[in-house]
Length: 267
Ligand code: FPP
Image (cartoon, rainbow, N blue to C red; front, side):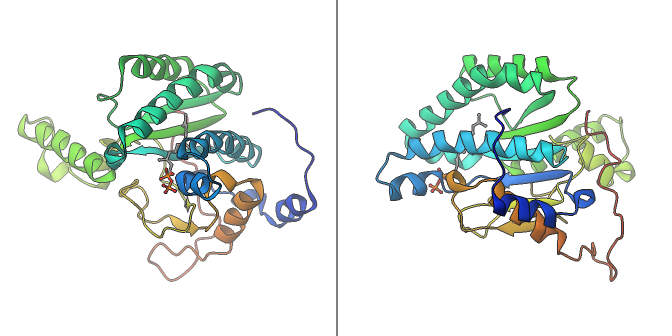
């Protein structure tokens, strides 16, 4: 994460185009296209996932430099279990291997890492490294990396509804207490403000059950570039595109100096 690259002409040009004060504070990413990228090169799909990890590392570094505060990435959906077991096993091993290798640097960089999703079906060894990594980085303040694994937006909403129903039937809350804020507090992303920008690579124009509640007003940027080819230049292009949007939130006027950060990013 710390390797210093000499900026290319294009990087410099795009960096100059960015309004540093309006960089999204929270960016969500659907890192898609690993498999197709590998197949097109005549390689096994696993090569795409391996390359995807190094791309993610680079994008974390670039995000931090731009003063973006939160990245939420979709690494494994509830639907991904339907893949051949060889690929599922590969991905599970990859998560474990990458965490083991990178956690000390993640901590040194003051990154707080959080896994979002139902971790129960994962092997003990992965659950254990996830829990120790989260505990180690819990108080880090520079940056938050949310990794969604065995995550599904609908499942998250159903789970939140269940929790609210339980609290309501036990008398802890009244049905009239239920509003967006209370609902939000039951989501796995509670305490983190919604992403201003969603990036999806590989040209697919779907949300694919990702952050269904949280993306309600996010700007969506879709690029044909496959995740293993995604880089700083493509990331800067996404942010420049975001900055060209007129964010009206259902109103008729752009919100000037919209606040991106009054929630507790470090919670
Ligand atoms: C989508 O490409 C990618 C995935 C399902 C896995 C993404 C995982 C990583 C990049 C590794 C991240 C690692 C850590 C530790 C967070 P795809 O396989 O769906 O590609 P395709 O659409 O071309 O088939």
